[in-house]
Image 1 (cartoon, one colour):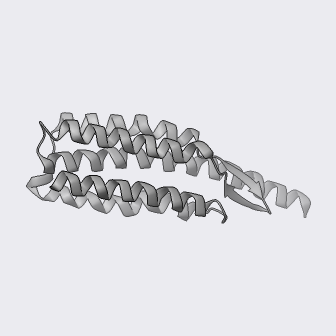
Image 2: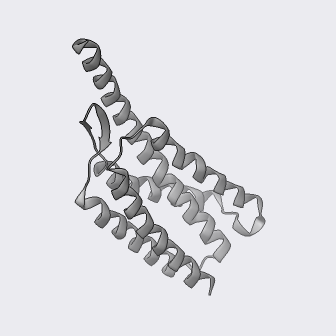
Length: 160
């Protein structure tokens, strides 16, 4: 029952992420908008205070590695552009498909691993996977944003 509930929750969150991303491309981005999601997500690490969610060092390494590998696809599809004297996230048709694909892969992993790994440990591993995915992705976005921000400020100072 717990696996079914968490799978439905993951699907809902994935769909929500796609809609949030599409809406975000209509407004200028800021460093705060890029960096705050991983900060907010980091509070989820408090789950590891409870023994039910604790994972081994090997499981941490496995989940973090898979998360970082998944982040490569997100990094490749997250680009910025200068528009109207501001920095905007470029819409990417591939992003939605990649996000859905990653979600389906995670669900397959979850159904396969739930047969041999306790639900609490599995939840911890998938939080690590997600955190290992969002941190490199958002850091890459931030570096790209800073680069464009410097260019924008340089262009503004030249035109004045």
